Every structure is written in structure tokens, then in C-alpha cells.
Amino acid sequence: MQNRSLETLACPEFDLAVTLDSGQTFHWEAHGTGFVGTIGEAPLYVEQRGDELLVTKGAAGIARNYFALDHPLDEICRSFPDDAAMSAARDFGRGLRILRQPEWECLAAFITSSMKQVAHIRQMSRAIRERWGQPHRLDDLELFSFPSAVRMAAATEQELRDCALGYRAKNLLATAERVASGAADLHAWRELPDSELRERLCELPGVGAKVANCVMLFAYERLRAFPIDVWIERVLKEKYFPRARKVTAERLRVFCDKYFGEHGGYAQQYLFHHARKATPRGR
DNA sequence: AGCCAGGCGTCCT
DNA sequence: AGGACGCATGGC
Ligand SMILES: [Mg+2]
Figure (cartoon, rainbow, N blue to C red):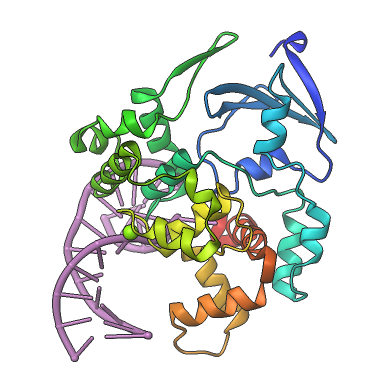
């Protein structure tokens, strides 16, 4: 990227690379010494230099909001419970932030995510963007935004299967139709309290408790939402229920809501990142 | 060459 | 309420 096309903003307590590779967004790609991607319909280059971000000129405000640079990260991390597993994860993931993503693209991405590895979710995201997204020019690059629900609703199930969605294609299409018609008003749902927002999301095809919690956390800024996937379930059973034979999903849900507290979603993200990147199984 | 993955919907006890 | 099963795909 050419320096004259960039501007600077402060980003204390932030690790861009860790945040973009922590399983909450799936389309950013390394480019030079930074990353390129889109935030809504805005194409963006972003690079971290210490406590500053270099971003595409005109996009500083968008970036500050998307990367949630206003979250009081030190205060959030100090609110985590004091135990060995949590402390190790907190130290390992320093600078990891929960993003503020656009609702629809976050919802769609996580509908595709079920029983898929992060690498493959990235492939599906790219295929969908290149097929139906809006192309945007950034210097010599062409970046594609995530297509609107209206645009996705016009696709066929087979076209989505061609993007390697498998059995998820039908669900994504059905949910796109509900959002496109206005029957599901994702933006209006911002006003709902957590429990009602979760209920509305779970009514959508392909959305259950886990996906709903991801969307609440990564798009609706519900920092208490605690997604329990394969990795987190393993961590919870190994570190917090080491002697139990069977631990039901409901028991885990109740425990996490109480034990990890008001920033539980943040705690969950640090545990997830640590499990994936710091253990033999994750590497 | 299997194993596994940021699960969900359905049906059974 | 809790558990079993089918569903697709490709990186490793
Ligand atoms: Mg649902």
C-alpha cells in the first residue's frame, strides 16, 4: 500500500493479527505487511505498527468501530475469573478484541460454519463473495464485499452447494429469504434484550444456540453471550469438570453464564484462541 | 486414508 | 429433559 493513501489511528491494547485469526471473521487476507478486507461496503487495507493502525484514508472511523478499539480491554480482562486455565488464556491472547461485525454477514458466515474448520469457512466465504459480492477497487486489488440478503435470496440451493456449503445451503437460503423479505429485521433486533434476541435468532433455519451466541457476540456486542463449540466444550470438561462422567449441555450453559459473568463472551474467546493455538492439538 | 471441524433439525425414550 | 442420528466437505 502506498503511504500517502493511508491514515493513522491509535490502537492501545490491540493485536490485529491475533484478532483477525481468532475465528470470529473469515475473510481478511494477509497483504504485504498488513491485511486487506471489507467492512460492509468499504474496502480496506490495515496494518499494525505498535500502538497505531495504518488504514486506508477515510476509513479510520469505520476501523475504530469495527475493531472495537473503545472496548476497555484491560478492565474486561481483569473481570475474568481467577483460575489457572483462564489466566493462561488471558496472557496468551493479549490484545484480542471482540469485533463489531455487520449483522447479516456475521449471521450468514456462522450458518455456514457448522461442523467446518476455520480454513474451510474461509473458503466458503471467499466463494460466496466472489460470486455475489460487490467488487471494490483498492489500488491494484479487487476486494469483494459480502452479498446482501436480497442478493443471496436470489441464488439457488445448487449454486450455494457449488460453493461447498453442502447441507448448509438450504438453511442459508431460507434465512436469506426471511431477512430479505423483512420478516426477520436483524437491525431492529438490536433493541431486544439478550434472551429475546437469542430466541429470534434461533427461529432462523440453521441457527441454534451456538450460532446465535456467536452472532450475538460478534455482531450485536452482547459481550455476555458464550458460544460453546467443540473446542470450548473440550476446555470446559477438561479444566472445569475434570472428574465428571457426563456433563449435559444445559449444565455447561448454566455454569458458564454464572462463572464467567458479564464479559463471558470475551473470556470464551480467549479460551478458544488459547485452545486452538497453544496446544499440541491446535498446532 | 481416516479424523475432525466455532452444529442443527428431527425423532426417540 | 437428554441422547442418537443423518447431514457434506476438504485440510491435515
Ligand atoms: Mg433455528
